[in-house]
Image (cartoon, rainbow over all chains, first blue to last red; front, top):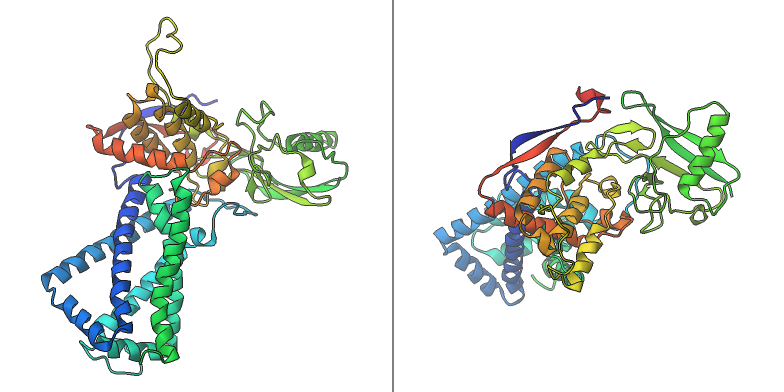
Length: 229
Length: 266
């Protein structure tokens, strides 16, 4: 029988970033900021249904923000980096936490969206990179010419390619699933949970995720259907 | 009734384990899962084979000793039930049950269905207490506690530390256990003076033990025999975030996880 069962030692406490709880709080805050961007971006995009002039004017407005635009882009980029960095570190820690897996393992309480966050996240990231290259930089613009400043033309020409639209719709559904978990999970990570309010929050997260996904998808669907041309 | 028990057999941490199937022809549906293993072990002993090792103590669902995976679910398919309270009538005649120990780096393997859960003890040691003056017993109602607070604290205190939350969590996280301990003291007035330190220290120890992170998916609550709610994890996060901000020195004492059974680390 060994006597050295436990020996106390002074350690630096895992700091805010070092602890799993702190990292989740960072993920919650950055996720929330990215969620606000998703709302703003959707409201901007939906102007395509008003007129081409309106959408192009909105695009010009954004570009005329100058330094402010770069500050916003910087904050968003920082959020993306922190969100992914924290996830990656937690993911590798969680893999080590169970070196030997189960022969049989069933899920009893979690939803499909809950369990696929590790998949929906990276796929949405790949989509965002593609999306930026297509509609912001214009380096990938299959089957048509990218015209800087003519947002309406770029969107319609881009989404007329069926696989661009399909990839967009697929990614946005995954984004919706990511939000369905993330929108209520961020409250939990920041320490807010209440037996009366959390079920309402979960329902709200589901409907907000559905609305956002439907809003975004309406654009490629309208282009493919010929309602927007 | 007839059942087939497919059980993880492993002599010790260093030996190789494998699943062994034991057909059982005469299972009384009123037996508990542990009694079923008792019957199996009797027959194994008669045949001169090594009985299946499993942990048990009170057999009335309150001590937290027993627990293993039954066909992929911690403590088996009945909600809010430990394996000692799980009767065999909940299974179908002829069913095959796969029995596996909790799998977690923080719970070193001991034998068959037994793992070393002293990581939980060390988390408790690091802050799951309140400091009181010794001497005469204090007056019963010297500190008023509201009925609702007392109920919430008692609900969190119902945690028996069986480890099912860690076993069920895809990340091997001990957030539900630690959250329950932090909540049950932190809700009461007696727990207030050490509330910040408790959260910071218990989270530090949880980290030291190598448990994974919480992803808020609720598998732990789903299998918890005491139905501890996810709310306690939010409580831990809140107390930790506040405590980590307010604590003036960021040096905490953690206990090095050492296990007699963990020969690989020696």
